[in-house]
Length: 312
Figure 1: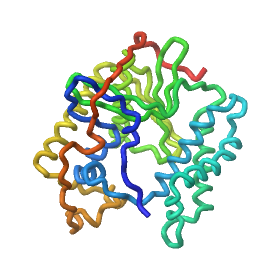
Figure 2 (figure 1 turned 120 degrees about the horizontal axis):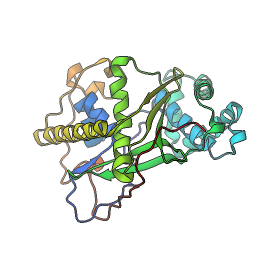
Figure 3 (figure 1 turned 30 degrees about the vertical axis):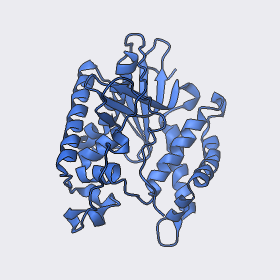
Figure 4 (figure 1 turned 90 degrees about the vertical axis):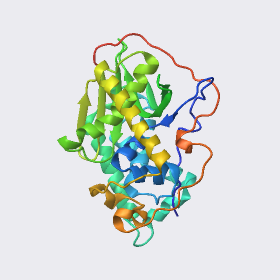
């Protein structure tokens, strides 16, 4: 069975009142377009289903364990406790999405025992990178959004926000894969700068640090942004949106073949591999991920920026 690609932001997005909004964009959909415009089309416009991926589902389960770990008293945030939380998190996910068990059908992928072992290994590695007994996150799995002056709505989910006593903000994202090489660091940081831009626009504070935690390889990537970074990110996001609208108006969603194609669920439909995309759907409105309904958008502000956050 396949999983329909839907925007989890849709039910949380705050409607916008009295403004003709261009559309909404998340870092994942922006990343899709930068990787391959045709992939963006398949996921956002055609909304083609995709089979569940063991790697992606591992990420979902591990994220859930790390989110719930901080509900416990600090002294209980141990590697064994995280291991004990893994199976209940997986069972809860399967109860909500029973089709996920199809990943382990005979011959379709890894066996469930080895997959759960890989999840435990990733969780164990987290404790070599951070000491959760010394952390008290301000927010976890936080939905954020902001409306730019260009009337483009940015939105997404942040894994964790730490706020120091002096108000300094650290934005943290967990990745269950390996850290990218130097040539791909900029792409990895784009998502974090996207979130930093949204936080800056809504809270009036430039985050003191952006931190990517790579649980697959046991590495950290840290970056200290400034206003110039975030203004450049805003220009880049608006340029991506302009390119998306141009492709939408022209119907030219061309593929961008790369090594990532081997991971694509839609390769059979790609012209680069001899496939034929489906006919473009006829819609009166923009794709769901790009649509904003009438209503009210509230933007809040916070104190000025502060020094970097410590783990204490």
